[in-house]
Length: 191
Image 1: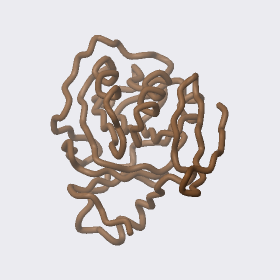
Image 2: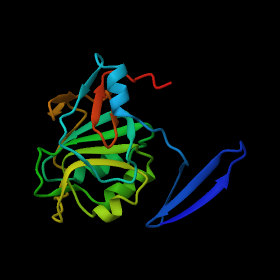
Image 3: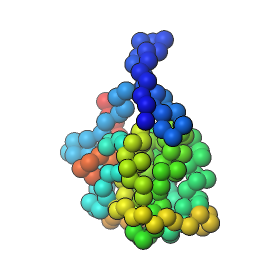
């Protein structure tokens, strides 16, 4: 990984991170979320996801509007979804809780970063964790495993998914940090 710092025309410091030949320009200080504080302020407006997840990405804090995918031990559909512009969006993947096959790998992580996704939450497993933690991307999952998933494209997107004691709908808003994951029907006022 190589980091180049530059000053743009408006005097803002920007960094350009280069991973595996891909480039993503980001703010030096991306938005930080404190889920504990958000729960204190919005306790009646948020749902707390059960503490099943660990952080595997380079961003420890992320959030945005979600899109949902349901797939079991097959990540083919994830390639299609992560090809889309992900600015301000978080992919929520219901992998059935399986930790036998990793749904997210370094290639998908790079694709998500290249297309400016804020993060990915996987009710399942990831692999190539050393590479994932180098990415400017939030990734939370249940576990890591070296076994990869099939890529047949079997699954559904933009559907209701339920795990961790919470029901997720595309269009909801998710906020995550090292403490946990919270979900809100509407965007939270963070100012």
